[in-house]
Length: 484
Length: 106
Image (tube, rainbow over all chains, first blue to last red):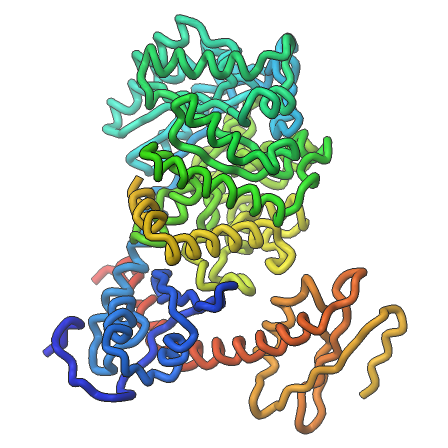
């Protein structure tokens, strides 16, 4: 008869327990983060960790924790094995859905000149950089060839509202296809909001098109990062946010910030700007090494240590707002906490293994070329076509996801096969980023001891765990974020 | 064995008993520290001989060497866990993905 884990155990003073597969990481606090085969984490003190390693567990409360976390088992008990198998299977189940996110670069034209732009935009009056209707229809057909039951179409640019007519066409066509194929479809436009008008707002309302914009912080930071004719990017962005919130709803618009040299040391001001604008979801992002950012050198202008200091300040400011009753969420922490505290995954494309390139998202460029990721498209602007999967007018969805250009980086960057990653206690929280490592180290896997991706994420994991275990309010707030 | 690196300002030999440490554990530790030190590994009858050199233009510190030693211990522990739990880990993965295996037509 199978023994249930929670049935009374004989109170043996020592031994008799078998280790289950686990990995561990020594935190800077002196505690040890221990992860089971499904990636579930527990933080132990050094004495508790030694007890686990020796299987000499006299503390009954510790024993209950270790058994509940499937780190030890009675050698005759198979239930922990079955539970772990179920959790591992659940973790990878979403892979069968394949590509959910489909990004349409409807134009390369833009009237901004953002210093960190990863798009290498063309000026707004240059013809020949808009996606055609034929290309758009081909892209839509590929998107709906994905087996995913739920599809998200994201319209990017340049400034996508410079090709608003095409967005309107795509949304209407997608709605028809979704109804015909019994799928869920949702829409996002990433826009600087400078061109927002009544027509656009009415359309977004009528078709539940969500708007994502960029807001780098207070006016000085934002306008310095994002010059445009008139020098009024911040004013237009804030005005656009208010209009969308007032005319469609408070949840109709969100914003993303990009950290630049000007941002460092001013995390609290940036967070406060978001809160004043009614934006209660903040994603404290680092700068990426693509596009104009690479050419202008702005990606190398600060190191990971400085960014982590910035992130910590921002996270603590957000927690302070929560203490004051304002339910602000830091999105990157929320993504990680969902993985840490639940058996679920938000599916964030940039933090998963196998990598989300191609199998999580596909990018359809204005000229019909298809890329494995947005960053891969940006590398193409720098004449690096490593992540170009093909062209809409020659290839099918199957061609794209089964191409060598996709399968090789997916395979080579898979974390469970990677040095350090394969034995890292944070492997489940983390991900593979072959595009980043190709751009910075000319290798899909990279070398993790020198990888900014690894250093950055490890720093965030340690910070989150430190706050979770040292601050009761932070723990309760993080638990709420894990379900947001 | 004589290590001759005249192009750096500091090098150090760290020894590990071959009975207590595997090459795999030392190699993994050396990889983990490759942002701070570079390590050349050879052995004699009783010991692994790790010649430690700087990984970059600046010299490594005593703390780096101490941390490398501790990491070798941790990698040995990880190795023990891996060996001890290999069978049950394979069982977990087999259970997890058994449903994906297509059955041959009867």
